[in-house]
Image (tube, rainbow, N blue to C red):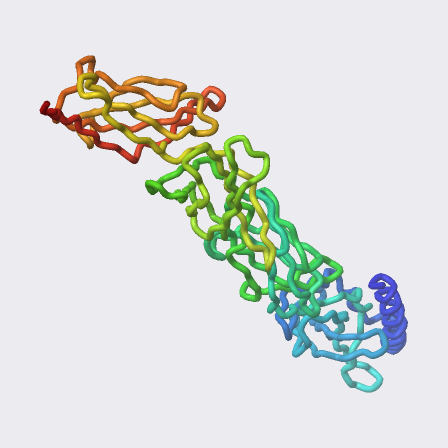
Length: 420
């Protein structure tokens, strides 16, 4: 369309000004040197209401230039200048106009003794463009671990948009390129990233001149890629005789987390949780089984949750629930019993005479009870406190998963007498 329109305009103008040029030549015959055709016409600047154009200066002495706008049907004189540049305005923002220039010299007509203008051939017709507005609303539409997708409301008069991205401010923003449509997908980003994107609407003429403003932009901040996979998970708190534990994990740049709780060999989760923070209270965790949980982070894209990858499973168990009871007086022994833990391969008993430390392994057994008769290879003593805990052990590949030891039980062997 532009090429056809320009062709028609050029044809019209050439015919119009050729008559003028011939008339001038006929008056002055061969004695008058006609200015050459204006070449090199180009746009150099643009605002929303003005444009600037330049062209190659003529080498002919005394040459001046007339500048015209045209819409293909009408010609609108803009002014005269002796400089090979001109400022045109006021105009409307985000629009295309068409301009041409012709050179002339003023020569005395010997017959009339008056100065008359002798015109050269007009320049080509150049499309000139004003800068469009810049206000728009940018919305994130999708995300992956390495890319974000955006769209924005089209700006009237814009036929392109320059895109910049940064993790801080505009001064450090990186120019990514220009898109023609009001949408873009930015790739090669980092997982768990948070970015600010600047959009500069522009209008481009047929020569490739870009009408833009250094300060005419819209931006959106907090645009997120999908969070990175979580690699570190822990159970950080237990409560004795409670079905509740606290699970924590490495925090990533996410809007929230989804958590799934399984029995140790379960294929489907027994419970699901969500959390805005990097911890959650896992409930319904019994003291009779090993469990596992996993976490995946998510970000909000509009009203939709976009999830990162699931973490590996973290296996755990509640503390083993056990009891201790002394045997017959003469035997100097303490019987330790515990509840069977599903998934456990065996159990280890630890013992100390100090509640806060010094625990030594007594034995590891597959049974759910054990009779303790010695500590550090010595027989138990009367009227002395002994402390125990029992750990359930589960094999997981090459690793051994152990239940925690937070519920110590104190037992005191007391000598008693029976009178007969």
